[in-house]
Image 1 (tube, rainbow, N blue to C red):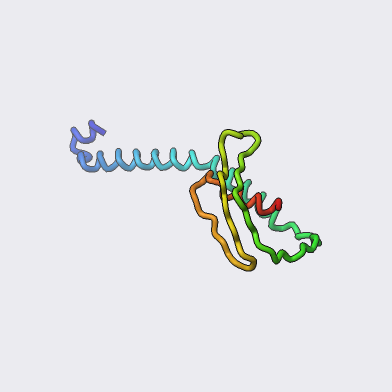
Image 2 (cartoon, rainbow, N blue to C red):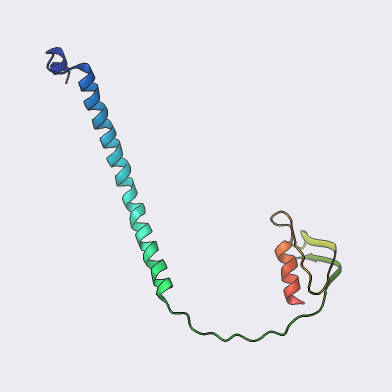
Length: 123
């Protein structure tokens, strides 16, 4: 390239254009090559999803649960999991939910919402 520039058979601009084109082409090929493994994993995942989607769901008859018409009340409930007795999930929790009403449990992650729902289910 430099000999051609020195002999005026190619301009500096054309030489730089050729170098940049070669650089970007090489870079693009390297990026494409790194994606082949990811593409293979994606194809395998798609095959697994298709296999699950093609399964015919079987008719499962579950037990008919009785309709619950009562209220839910927690009166002064204190609770901790046996594996972490020093970390109280509830401390003196009082909660009253009337029948046929809605209630939202709102709070940060790890502050007992799921545990509270779990206690509803076991009562």
